[in-house]
View (cartoon, one colour):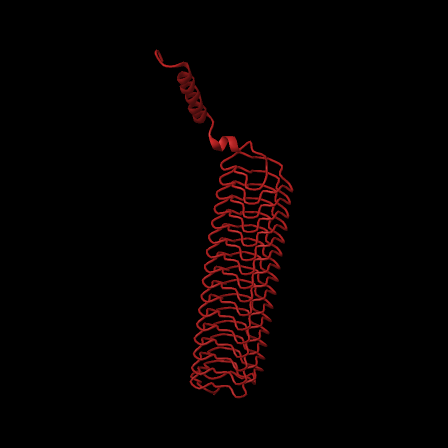
Length: 367
């Protein structure tokens, strides 16, 4: 510094100190100490166990923040950015998360009872064993989310997007899922009793072993869905598309399937006793060994179906189309066949309406 004016030396020293300070204290670290408030930037901060109940954090940047066991009950988190945030065991009952971004966030065992998540993005988020009972998830996006074992009882998921979501073992009893998109979702073993799935798209979804007793599925799309061994007893399935669906061993007793499409569906050993299948399309379906005792199949299309060994005792088959059907060994005792089309139908060893057994080779009529 020899030969330089003192003022210039002072300027260099000040600039050097400022540069050093900028290297030792990052902006992110400095922001972690900022007070809670709208638009606060806590990106990457460690806020584990922090108590922020009732705080206004709308539009806050909480990306990659650690909020494990944090208390955010009743907080205003509208439009906040929680991308990749860790909210494991966080408490957020009745929090407002409208339009928040929770993409890839970890919400394992988080408590979100009664929270408002309308329009929230939860794509690929982890909600394993989270409590979302009575939460509002209207139009929320949960594509690819993992919510196995989650509590979603009485939650509102109307018009939500749940494509490829994993909900195995989740409790969705009495949940509202009307018009929701559940294409290819995994719901095996989930509880959906009393749930409203009217107009929902469940094509290719896995619902094996699911409890859907008393669920509303009118107008839903279940094309090629897997429902084997599920409980749909008394479910409302009017005009539902179940074409090609796997319904083997499913319980559809007393269910309403009026006008439903069951073409080429697998209904082997299914329980359909007392079910309403008025005007339903079962063309080419496999209904071997199924129980259809007392079912109403009036006007139904059963062309070419396989009813080998099926129980149709007391069933109403008025004006039904059974042309080309295989009824070998089937029980038709007490069934109403008024106006029924049996042309080309195989009745080998079938039990006829009057109780007598049809001879081998009987076709179209019992011999």
